Length: 338
Ligand SMILES: NC(=O)c1ccc[n+]([C@@H]2O[C@H](COP(=O)([O-])OP(=O)(O)OC[C@H]3O[C@@H](n4cnc5c(N)ncnc54)[C@H](O)[C@@H]3O)[C@@H](O)[C@H]2O)c1
Image (cartoon, rainbow, N blue to C red):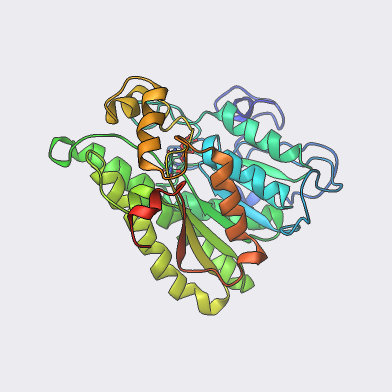
């Protein structure tokens, strides 16, 4: 089933492609049958998309199921690190609310954003592990919409335990050559969007007196490099959010942490603009440059490498890890103190 087939734009299947107000959505219960729902439409973004449960049996292919019974919200879930995170959390037993802007041209970039089809593929991957999944088309820049989604997640799944603020974008330009729009887009998604995600989930985690928020920063949030000052401002900024918010919600039993990856093999960097940023024209040029940056003998790491670190931070094994950001940098972090 394509996610796009349930968008409230005239094409549709399932519930007759009606867009329902949030309050009319019923409870999503366990069962073998795939359930499709159209949820709310937010201002400027289409409504939610598809929901389903896989077989309600054992979680396949995962050791222990240490997140069994928990519910995770992951932003930027259509592909890349977000999709790998949904899969890693599902392997550990979590049900997943997979959120993405799912609109390739929604922001002017040198590469397309994730699509509805890619988001649907994430949902399918989670469901194939026997976990429940719902795909939500939403923009992390829309604070009200994020709060609606968090409330909806709790209503649909009964609880919310984990939030991964992963959605992000990038462009490349020196600060003085960058348009105000270009600067604002990166700050709006990568910093404000992370704050919106945190603000949306905090009341639900605090109410349960447990839970884990994980933000995706970057090695660019640890140092400086040319033509990325806006991105670095946002990625340093989300580390500030981790530090500050951890002090606010820690007494209520909620943990806040982050990951700071080196270059990861995703569409965000597999494009000409990134190759040009390292003075090259191909992915081989990018990998060569990153080999000179990383300490371990690797150029790009894989999304699953980052997802595993996120799954650890979400897990009870990290129960006393909060207010910290884990470098997943193949040793590039030897360059800085953190
Ligand atoms: N790829 C890397 O080298 C790398 C390195 C360090 C950190 N990161 C960070 O990892 C995170 C994930 O990036 P990725 O590499 O998987 O990139 P990606 O482009 O493959 O995936 C990002 C996803 O976020 C979604 N998204 C973008 N703006 C959104 C918005 N406003 N609302 C909702 N969803 C939105 C996109 O549609 C896309 O599906 C980002 O925060 C990025 O900055 C990436």
